[in-house]
Length: 372
Ligand code: F6P
Image 1 (tube, helix red, strand yellow):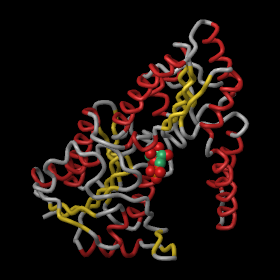
Image 2 (cartoon, protein in one colour; image 1 turned 60 degrees about the vertical axis):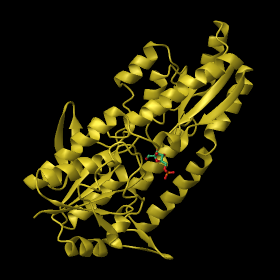
Image 3 (tube, protein in one colour; image 1 turned 90 degrees about the vertical axis):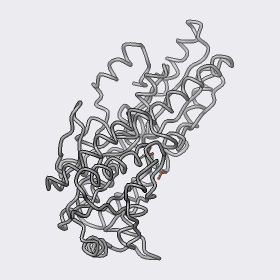
């Protein structure tokens, strides 16, 4: 019998349970495998906290939000154990061997793909699934969780419209996305935002204010601004990008620590950005402004139909890959199909919104201000 382990890591995302069910049901029903779930991400492997995922355990979870296995942002090679940060890879390998695992399935976003690759390089048979509401995993058209979060953020924009309109206000709505703006862009387009600000396109606050003033001149005395949590002004963005590049390029521990500290200081300065922008716009336009930070509401609750279908598709494909002995890969989505993508092509890469993407072009054509 083939034994497989499964874990969920990184921030949770709607569709994780649907994916666990997809992997598990296909693994058990079609390929007669034995499935073990590890709790709270890679930490569950370190402490051997597990439970058998049989048909009964997989029943009734398709529509549940969150993850029945729990999750964490723990990294195998740098795990906080008491006061110390330790490389727990050997403990993970031991648990993998103790369970006689033939494969380990890791469900996660960019960080998880990197951690999974490290384990694959230590000889474990790994298959990953791309999950995150940010939709920023490389080499896949889409990640599960994105569609649900997009729906939630769009509904919020719809609701903000009527109150902004009634009060003749600006409402600045912050949408998740620290480095990438897929969610803010998608929800901004779907929700008819007047301004959309993304991490990929540094904004000029004067351009944003002018777009709002121009609406006032044409009789529209309210505006909705959709801003990604990681959006930056044109004064700050080059410094942050340079610090990120310096961190990636650092060749030794000291350089890396210094680059990290500089980046952290710059990123601390970004906190409160949405509030600052709202205050600036109030002063520059004379309109009242309010902020709404959607936060973790976007990650909670039942997955959309599209996410359930996607998670089931790639989950069942994952079981098929394991049966065929295809390891060291992520199940990538390419149109209506799926494909095995080597983890080396995924880990460490981020799928940013290309500035010439069709969604950007369309947003500009419907006269949405992108702040540039
Ligand atoms: O990666 C998904 C995400 O929701 C990002 O959009 C956001 O920046 C981050 O996680 C928040 O992380 P946490 O839940 O750890 O605060």
